[in-house]
Length: 135
Image (cartoon, rainbow, N blue to C red; front, side, top):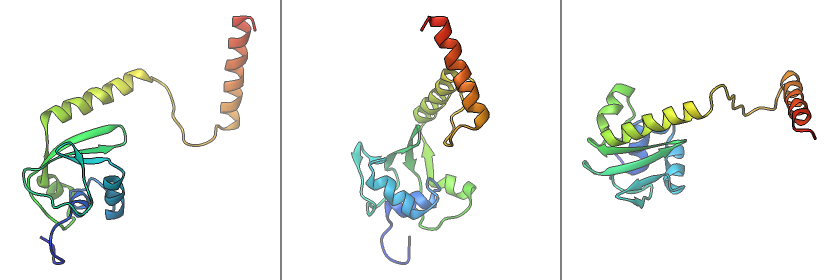
C-alpha cells in the first residue's frame, strides 16, 4: 500500500507500467479508456485483487485481472506480476495486429509533411491515374 492512505487506480496503472506517467494514467481514466466491470472508472477508484479491467491504448484493448496491488513503480518484470492478461484478450490483440498488418502492406503512415521527393511521387501518381481514367 502507499504511505498516503488508500491505493488509487491511476497509481496502480502507472505502477503496472501501462502508462509512462501518473498524469497520463489519470487522463486515460477520465477519457473513458479504462473500464472496470463494463463501467467507466474514476482515478480514485480502489483497485482490488481479482478486479477485471479493460484498458484501451491506441488500437489495442487489453483485458487484465489484477493479481497484486502496488503503489511503487518497479522494473517491467516485477510490474508484470501485478496483473494477468486474459487469454481471449491476447488472441484478440494478435488477430487485430495481424489484420492491420495485412490491410496496409507498404503503406507508410507519417505524422510529418511529405518531403519534396514524396510530393513529386504523389503528383506523378495522380497524373498517371488521371490519364488512365480519361480525365
